[in-house]
Length: 140
Picture 1: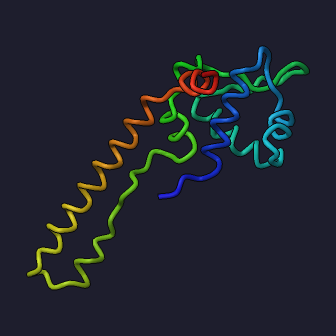
Picture 2: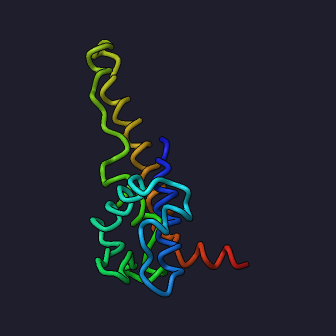
């Protein structure tokens, strides 16, 4: 499994917005992160759709957080960027390749169960870590 760069960028975007006393504009975020404004808009759009931030359109507008940093977990950000699909979805291809007498289906089920458990543990850990925790750790 590989997490996309946009997950890391989303974390940084939220931290920058959270650290600002006023709404922060898209072009300011793209300058600070060193990414194109058009690419940044794709990431911020995902954050808006997920309800983590709001875009305020006005001369003094920009992006603002919808929640306190202590209420935004890495899991919230992960779901906003990576989606809610399960990590493992088998096509049951092994059933077509191997002899059914080999208990291929049962073996596949065991493997999928282990991978689903790993996914649950990963997501549970992400739920424990908030943006406030990250700020606190950076200040130590």
